[in-house]
Image (tube, rainbow, N blue to C red; front, top):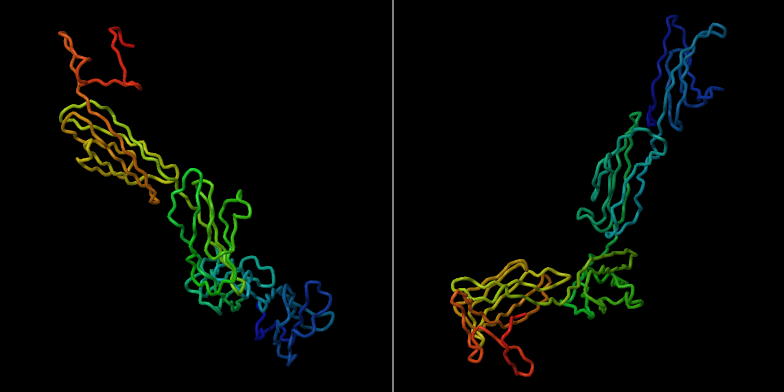
Length: 388
């Protein structure tokens, strides 16, 4: 049975029709308890049990007869006290920036298998998964919010309690990073504080994720600035403390990209009419993927022949040059964070010489056609011999 405002009715009977009495003992059974049993008429085999102030197991005894001829019947009863049911794990003041709170019932006594339900703004979950109160939920207003617990004990006793929680304002943090493409030896990076509710903030703290920089790794300025020694991945955090003592933290894993290096190579310089000449991209961007490539094919004098675009460094680009000669190719690249690089190379498409049994003759003393001479001083001589 449960402790409640009303009393329980007791009714005794016996085949002899003799009036009996009711007594309540604790489990030690030394003497009947004085007070819980209310019997206004000792001759009607009726009484009232007031469980107020009781908790635990008791023996209820009904007795009739006279001294040596007294007969009795007893019943073990359990009384559950639920007046002290409380909501555990929830402070009276919270901040919008707090992590969700785990809600637990506190019945004040040991209860093996209760059933309970938490309700209110920002409350989610179940008894199996756990109930949580999230102060940052859009359902939770700034100021007072009421959380309710409905509790049923394993003995079937029911209780309900509520608690008011004051939700304190906390800003929603945010920051942006200046567009940077750091060289290998590092560079200065600026951070713009884009947080909402700056009016409520009394202190800012930046942590730039660069402990090797010593004191320069932190700052108390509203907007941050830090010199990073090299491009790479850095964890940057911004902390705000409000006038109510609420603390909001935002951490971002940020990639400060490098300046990409554009490079490519020609698959071969042999001209075959009607066959496209292929180029392989060899550009490098260590900390950000290259996702935009623009190839410009030109004559040696700068006239544009064509433009090809690609979204991947893995693509092989080919262009149909219509004749032998010298050409120029420009490659412009951009990685996913907007850093750019470019390069330009000149090359010559050469004819393919078909060697036949009748032989092939080239006059190396005449105009260079399918051959070139590389000499630092411009002087060269010829020697008939087997090539190396």
